[in-house]
Amino acid sequence: MVGQRLKRWLAGVVIPAVLVLAVPVLAAEDPPQRVVSMNLCTDQLAMLVAGSDQLISVSALAQDPANSAMAEQAQEYPANHGRAEEIHLLAPDQVIAGRFSAGATVSMLRRLDIPVAVFEPATSLDDVRGNLRRMGEVLGRPQRADALIEAFDRRLASLRAAGREGRSADTALYFPNGYTRGDGTLIGAIVRAAGLDNIAGELGVERGGHLPLEQLTLAQPERVITGSRGPGHSRAESVMRHPVLDAIAPAGVHRGLGNADWVCGIPQVLDAVERLASL
Image (cartoon, rainbow, N blue to C red; front, side, top):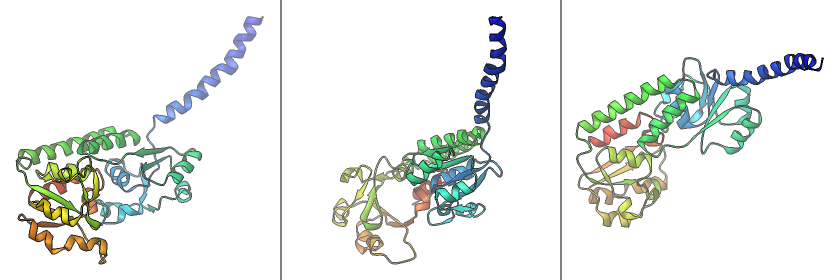
């Protein structure tokens, strides 16, 4: 009798419990259908990888051509401003954020049981591949991500085959407030892939830091690459127009490398590689 009652109890309680436990596992394998991105770089990665109607909102920065290489495509999506309240009202089943997205927003969304995938910023060309691959996993679109990576590698190989990494020219990056970047950064990798030698490391700047104009003058780089200027005339940007830059760079000053060219690790960074290689 005890054995029969135990069997009935197992049939009535344990098996349904197992089924209940199995449901989330099966659901987790389904790709998300309502995806919201709240970071400029994840916006662009998601637009490249997402399926039709899968991505329902991107950040407002994605629509700004000064910062986004995909500003035109981003106009097709409703914009968000990274606030937890507005994102929650969109009823997403997946949110994508960057490491430096608003921590309070990410924390609140997770407390509301909304999945949030956080992406690290790209600091190399390898990170472009890695973030594309991870976006494919998050969105359930690995084949699309693989296709993008293959196209990226083909174009990079083509640039290298053209001999653009075979030449060398001492180059200085010079941005507002005299800021420069060196190795271990995405723009450093772009400069290197274009066949140019970034002198930041020789001047003691490993990743990023201030480069006094006097020190830049003494370094005598062959080429200077500056950032693009905004619509105003800020004092921070005036140093990029200093006449000494033209005097010290025999190969010339290339002005106009904008944030959209290098801030995010997306395949479009190869546009900047090709442009710099042609200087």
